[in-house]
Length: 494
Image (tube, rainbow, N blue to C red):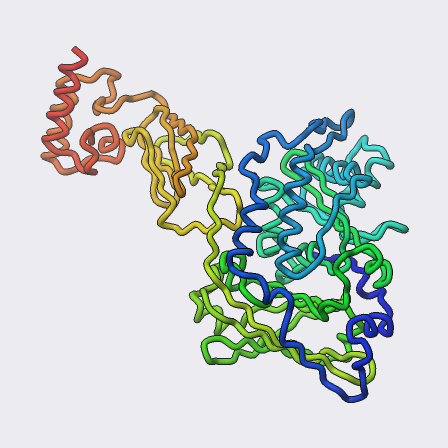
């Protein structure tokens, strides 16, 4: 996605003076190897993130639920606080100032979320629905758009809620690997949330759609006047950050970002990025340069493959980033060098969500239960996800949450992760409704069913439906033991 930023509006002279002081000279090269984020300890990083996860986050996020066109609605204060807390965690992690709520614009964001919900479409440029007033539409559009409004400097983001809480959406915004962007995975949400000039934020939600806007100051002087973190503290900001960084916050094929809020000329620069890992150096083949003095890049494919392929969490260990060739005023260059030390942070889950509360499946068909958990960045290994089903005669479930319907009936499927269990209903339908043991399908269970199972067993030729109804010991074959169990069932019902 695209965003608009004030960084391109900063004069080269002023920004250079703020960041580099009196050190600028002709044909000089400045090398920066340290960053304030290198002072973060593993314990601080874990504790601050877990402190941003509210185990009492409300199931109902609204103080007033939106009901278009009569009610714009509003979010509960705890939702606003928790979402800002998660945003400010990532800004702290990156060495940036905290954002505060922009209450004056919350209603605009609510209108943006309502607009998307009415359209049922995720877009930065929503069309006007039939019957919506121009005033409502214009405000809603502004909350979704990635640009700015005259006299109102901000960048707008949109996201499909995807059954996550609003704070957990920030994890996905920051990663930017999940946003469905079509421009070669371009990072945009992250650069807005981690905007070095950012000071405020507003947000809204309606149905499964949400909006988030980050407000920033339009000049270095204006920013320094209102922010406790001054721009002369660091000449650059990176994500993943210098120093310790949770490995589960970054995937092998995720874009990395470097923001340089100063007077650097990307068009005149000769920027190159090299990654050093385990004693080897890897040249990044393509660096995406932003008009607002930021660059994005991915690890080279050869390194991604060495780390286990795409969509894997980063391994523990050190990755040195070497960036050269930022052109700055005075015919000078700035080079960056920092090390990201990935570690396995202790981030437990607090809640599990399913996409649906119940699943209707026809006999013989399959359905996958879509699973989400909170926080989105929690450390969960595949072997920690345990699926079970209450009645295996009705349906089975595998380790990926795929349910296979066996016979008509109702049961429940459950998943347990780190001691937390979530359950949903499984409804298997078919016509007519047969019971387990009714192999001849006459709606009664008697000795004829046992005889029929023995005949099928001797012939060694039976269908999946026969197996589903006659396999009472669930060993995936029909045999004399199943016939005996059917007789027992017949006697019991008699």
